[in-house]
Image (cartoon, rainbow, N blue to C red; front, top):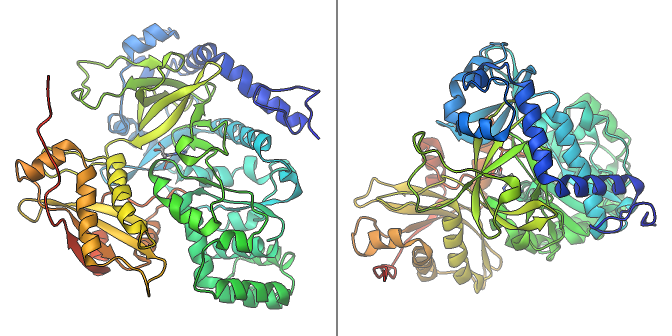
Length: 599
Ligand code: AMP
């Protein structure tokens, strides 16, 4: 039943009255983008007028855009580091925010090798919760009957640390899952999870994953969607099933729980869920003992309608593997968020990954945009860039995102580059293009994440006829050789190793295919200047990137937010990768390059 009659939405007929309200909120907020933005900036500036940071710029109580833009500088994390350090050290005076800093959120972005610490305030949880509350009503527009089953979502928390001044520092998702907002969320029949809170909130990643998997298996017929935050998290869950299905089957057969699960509250919760089910155990054994795991998600969870995982940005490379494991189920990218601020949502979550556009919600923060021109000289304090407002962006152009948050970040460069693809009402919609400054450089060349991904895609085309996909990759600028050269570490999934695997020659050609798709500065360095040596591929053993992730997690990375680094130069990581190399390949010839024609 829809409540079309109650409140219809231009987005579509809402499934419930609650959904109708959420959709109406989206409509009203996006219709009034500029007004909402003006109000948000006014609120932030007036409440933070007495902070040490804003007082520095002599706003004298002004809360209008012109004063703000003319007086307050655009900054990076590094610019704010002294203030952030003082807060971390225990200075409770209103430095960035008039509201007390409640905790630090540890970003996956780093500064000088360390995770960035993002100060936040308690009420930001309300804003995050508000954004989450909009996701289901939008999904219900496209996928009916989600109230007839459950969602199997692999969600994790991470142990937290304290700053010298005693503030908690943890990933934003840990903060959210541990909050009352999440733990005591109202029951929504459209959004029932298979994982009990005790499993999600168990800080031990094995126990958490194991019990979430048990629940997913026990309730397999009820599962209507399978998800994780990022695609890599879902693949990790599949890998976990590969490694642990035997024990899982034993537990399900006998109704007992693996003795490695020692958390008492978790054991108690699981005792209410796990009952002997030999038939299910047989089924799991039959499906999982097969060599071929193609379509395993749809085999084990046959009623799955879609995967709920982010596959945009750096996660795009996982699409083929997820398609393989899910028999091509749709992949829904529902939201775009960061530790600094949650930005917005995808109003067409069932679209193809290549067509995903996120609508930034104007109530979340004050948003500005630096037009992104790759050929422009770097920004300096002396030639401040012209920043554009959320309501004034041009379709087809790329911009770098700059935010001013309620928690006290002012004109802060997030480091994400977005392309405007259209508008929903007066709110622009964005394709996530890339995160800035992930570079490989040997000479004057600069290769960013998107270019590297494109090069991998180009090489993948050659591998496809050998039924082989790239599972994971990273890169390294090897300057120990003269001239230096790019090294690409590849982990491959050869689906039929006995009969059809890529030979040495094919992998050599992959090196060249990568070079052919790199930018002209790179190719000029290779061809005309000989300042760059032939690109090298090092194929690593299966499971190597899993080990890399375990290593990162052991050093404090969050499972939820973990993304494989696209460029590495940290010795222990290099040593790990190099010790797993099974074959080495070089470009057999130089790529194409001709001087640009300038008329
Ligand atoms: P973190 O601060 O560790 O939460 O990382 C936030 C960053 O992850 C963002 O600034 C983006 O670069 C990236 N990210 C978050 N959501 C998405 C998304 N939906 N698509 C692509 N990249 C994303």
